[in-house]
Length: 235
Ligand code: DC
Image (cartoon, rainbow, N blue to C red; front, side, top):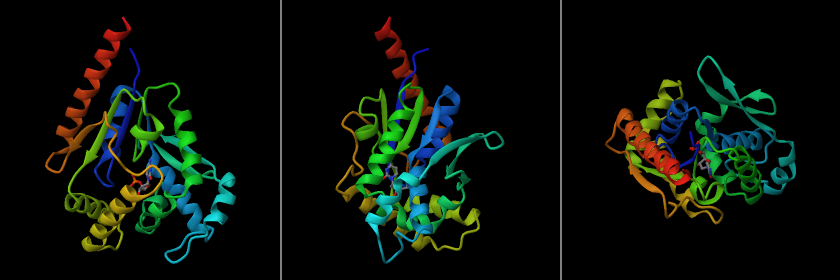
């Protein structure tokens, strides 16, 4: 079967990773959550004191980037790969509000993006990959056979994220989460390097009023059509 590259971009908390993960499983593809990579670098920057709410020592962080080792390690029990930073599982730590508040700042740093984009391109050399993020269809895999651009209203996204955080036992208010979603949208779309934009050939997918099953079925349908076309073109 012809393997393709699937790029899923979009705003934060649009459920990109849930769909991407499921899709990769059904297709037997590798799944890569690039947001987890930016989050892990942010965690490192926070722990080393390079980045706080009030300060950013960008030169310090950039000089230390070579000491950051990122690895996705598959966890059999939960059925997906978890982020390891310098050989420590940081999957829980990178999903906190504290990291969410600072990650957009770290994701604007050119050298951070260069390092992560290079790793991401290497991961996709053999195709058979579903990668989600903000610049996958535009920068990482501009030639991806299928590009999806996910969107939903900020209120819907904040509601979903708020529920997730409450389930994890975090002490946050809905207002705070909505503000964070809007703030990240602003920074993600206005940064100078690789801002979040829809690739010209991406399919816009608004899931404000769609359940998970419907989303998944529609995206699987797009995928099967592309794979079929690919087969026809090859033979
Ligand atoms: O998908 P996420 O919310 O976990 O991503 C966390 C942050 O990382 C998000 O605010 C923007 C940034 N990001 C990015 O700039 N480029 C990517 N390819 C993925 C994420």
